Image (tube, rainbow, N blue to C red; front, side, top):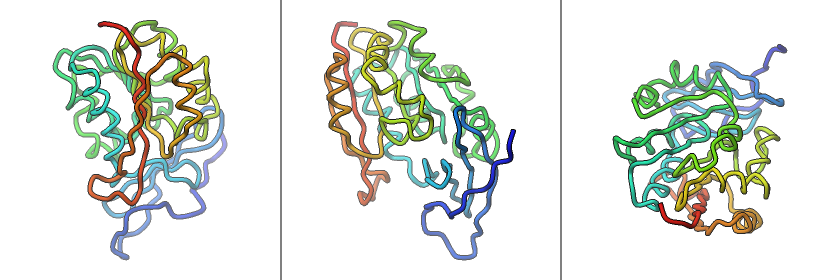
Length: 243
């Protein structure tokens, strides 16, 4: 495997005192090409894709909203939930807080090193989420988990890219195309909900969701709870039916 070079530019981290140094912790190859880089500056951590920041430990509000909005929409706290993308664990943590003791949560993470980071340098951020008895962790492609279980989930929460395209992994585009969305529709139980995080709005993607049979709500969520300078998008795509 070829060596992975550190990113050429400093990541977009929150402002910190000048004496807090930039520390390059680790890197991971992504299947299909590209690399993730784990960066630290003082108390803040960042995961970058090449030179673009995908997530930071100081920005978690919209990732948490992905879970809380989906749970509120369902109106129940049991059932089976698929979380696509472990990241820094913000969506998983919010899922465990929102859903009850009878829920079952399957987390699928593509990059093995992200799981290693979760149990190592990011363990204080993720806390005890991975040891929760409701959680099953898989290393693999969330698309495979979706297509192998028709009517397998009450909720599917996707935060695997920067939006409904294949920025991080080109293969992610199959999650967002017409046939991929139909597969996700089939993986949901009646009245189930698909929640998707995005760094931006996308009217064409909403149309694709509707063509797949979903009714769609779009939410604009501040990236940080008390700071609306940066806005993210969460779509709730509901499957009709009765549980």
